[in-house]
Amino acid sequence: MNFIEQPIYVLSVLSFLVIAADYTAKTKLGKKLGVALLVILFTAIVANCNLIPSASNSIPLYDGIFTYLAPISIFYLLLGVQLTAIKKAGAPMIILFVLGSIATTLGILIAWHIIGPQEVIGENGAIIAGMLTGTYTGGSVNFNAIALAYDFQKQGVLYAGTIAVDNVVTALWIIITLALPTLLRTFWKDKKIVSITKKETTEAVDHINFHSLIWLTFLGIFSYYVSELLSQYFPSIPSILTLSTIGILLAQTKFVATLKGSHILGLYLVYIFLAVIGAYCEISAVLELKAVGITLLLFATLAVLLHGLILVLFGLFTYRDWEMLAIVSQANIGGGTTAIALAESFDRNELIVPAILVGTLGNALGTYLGFLVIYLLG
Image (cartoon, rainbow, N blue to C red; front, side, top):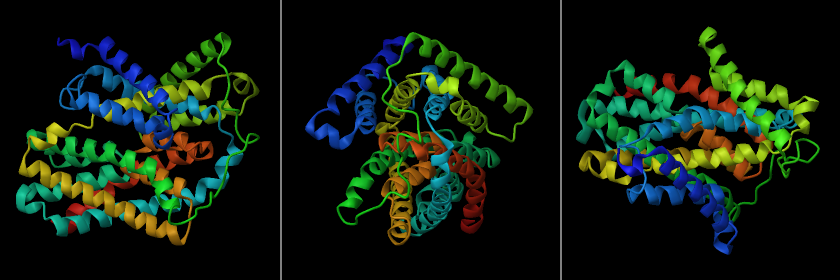
């Protein structure tokens, strides 16, 4: 095994890059970017310099972080959320998310006629358009569901190249949505539909102690186990939804409310997850496909930009809460986990649970919209 693929080395690098991002975020320029954005940028640079594995030579450690750390980080963040705040943000989030899903579909269809990927890719173009519609509605679950339906995974290089394009565009969109509220405020003043107060959530600035650490560790691992166990008996219910429900219920108990450090622990795990997102932003994998790769990149990029433009225009005339809009857009393009990372970066704790819920809604809608696009383009 090459030394750069050794899990302990990679984990050391990821941990160090979180530290580097935290220190950089304390500088004048770094404050404008934020820790989350800096983690993605730093890791993307390191991965593209071949100092750690990227998407094409992914290692089991990355899969473990996606499988275990990402959902458990959500669980920890939910332990500081109160239900009274969630009610206020529910309806606007759902409305914006549904519109964002429609915007994704329109973006794909418009980009199809502008870029014309079918001229380079051929008959697989419509299938790829459907896969991208699915993944940019609710996540990779839809991407793979559509791919399996058409045996597209047997396409080898083209399938891998489409995944690489998806990774690059998703990582770039995280960066854009992190900066979007600040950019939009320079033109249009926004208003938060709901703002969190200290009475509505557990105090985020808490110092973890040994008692809290041992309980939080147990609760996170055991709750994850329970959610996976229940998903075997109720496969139609996503395990992340079960885990989130457990977290919400525990957050309302007095005992869990006394535990300190859940926010800090969850936030750190989110940053490790974002570091892997950055590592998956592999430019070379796209360039290796030459004309096909560039065409796919242009097609996906334009589709996502059109999604964002449509969503911003709607938000301008309705819910002018730019942070909420950015979170909803990220729930579409990157899925619930990255949307939660944005909610944390914006200090919008009341939007964490709605982000999870609309992310689950995206899993339900994405496959249907993907097949619809294939039908329309077929």
